Amino acid sequence: MPGAEGLTQILYNKTKYNYLASFNNISITEEFERIITILFESEIQFCVNDFLRIYEANDNPLKNQKMFHSRSVKKLIDAWVGNFKRENKTFIFEYSQRKRSWIKIT
Image (cartoon, rainbow, N blue to C red; front, side, top):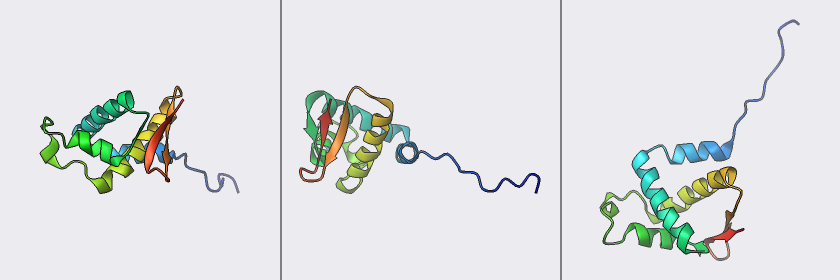
């Protein structure tokens, strides 16, 4: 039959779309990137508690906004690290289930 080509596969990048769905709010994105930059520069590995310690610091004016909590941070870090791996090839972070932390791999 002319014109009947069947189903076509839709191009879908799960990592990219998870990132876009998780970081669709500019204030959450900016605060998250501020914290993750501190962790990248100072730590070879970090965990959810390290992230929350920086976020909940007394000098952080956004600490009372409750943007991040222990249940959401792992999902957000996973989405961000996945997107980071897709864009950056100089080093990556891998999650260690045994240590429950992200470890920098160069």
